[in-house]
Length: 244
Image (cartoon, rainbow, N blue to C red; front, side, top):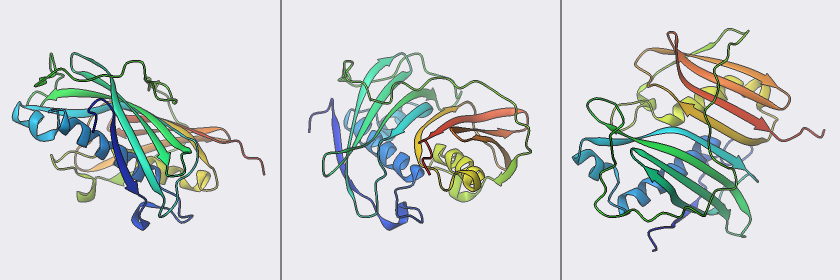
């Protein structure tokens, strides 16, 4: 396998779909992150290699655009590559293709290498060899950008940080923030088809309760996960036009 462009084949399982047998967004994100982890490991930048150096990758922001919904038992081809690296930052893109050749989704993510002890960005990523980049290849969704702060007229829903939210280093997994916001928006969006989502991660959740604020309109939605007065995560969703 060529290390500049990493490819994995995945099957959509029953545990990964919703009531309409469509691949959940959280499940798609988990697939992409597993592929990214496998690629990083092959490059000598995986969890074990980084951890031995006192470093860890964290997701800063990401964007995904959904072209069509994948369904139960579909076979998907996930392609991922690193577009740019600078200091502690790594810009990684993705394309997801159906076995028929049609494009399911594209995504782009910004990862940051942190010092495990200080939780601050490292000065430079410790790479055992030059990292192969594909700077001329950009995901169709475009680059994930920062999301502006905003206030909400409606009170939040409360979610408890549970054991199932924690990853192998004891931190809340980034997909939990997405799941909390989608759960909070479910009543308004359950009949809407998602077109795109952008997320920005600002701080880590701690044990206890988080507040999930949401605002919905016919064309999109916005969400924030807060703990105390601090925004932990912001997200913006857009939906396909409702032609009914």
